[in-house]
Image (cartoon, rainbow, N blue to C red; front, side):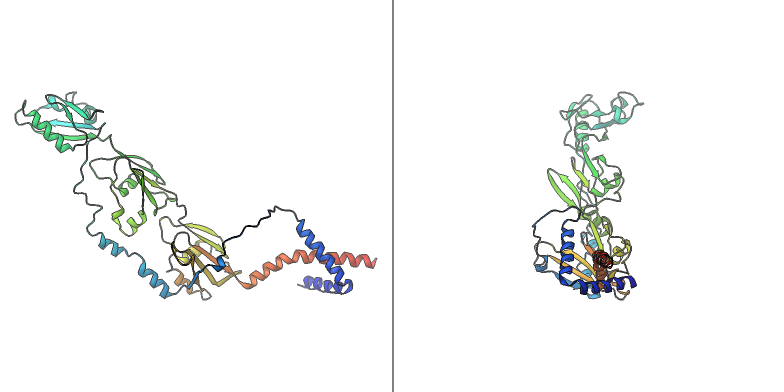
Length: 387
């Protein structure tokens, strides 16, 4: 402080000694030096959106606001009540339809020569009847049977009816020994992506994800995409598991592709006067304002303005306002309890402003190098005059 005071005093004395012309020369030299300073520069005349003129809502974060938001948030109990009929889980009409490449195991009781003609040492898949490309199989005494697109119940009835001409009261059973014709695919952020057969057991979205080893840490739980017949359907695994919204647990069909993307824009961005600015993933969790600030290392107490903690949230389109800004006044640290109940949404921006003194210190840090240069110039001039 003494050195700075001495420097300023000397500058004022030299200003008096030199007069305004010398100060003007120094100012001109300083400006020319700024113009010729090293570093990259691009001349531009771009104009940004006049956000200052946009109608932006500013709301304080209070208990009343949190209660109002909670009233419009989905309640797991309400969703469970809506899904009390469990339409996505119950599949009374589901049946498997045989396709090309499947292997059928046909058993005729009391007639082993018809059941396993190749010998008992082979598995059912190896000794079974493969469905040919024309959609048929061949069976002794019966001949060709068209099976594609039919259930095993239909095929069993036909074979039993046609064998009755050669065997008295035949007892026939038909099973699918190998499901080769129909597949669904799971890709993206799962631990074991791959293809999974469609069988006589219904395969739903959550079943397929489970068979694929579950979701990875970088998975986006909220925007899973089901592609079917050139049509994409967005599903939320988060709502299925957290809220019990089983209506989205769709039954998979042959050729379906279930893609789990990366977390992408499902993040919250924490900026400003925090110790560790960061982007926090929200793929599979809910995140409160207090938790987000905590994961960013907490506020920088030396520079932050505790009364200026803002959450900037883009409003849905169409809307009369561009964004809503929520403000938490944490001058009293107890306000962080309210912040722990304010739940963030993906793409929210949490910004902690700087205190007025911190902004002034930044201005001084920018000015001091220039003042030091002027001070050194006055010292040189004084020394020259003394000589």
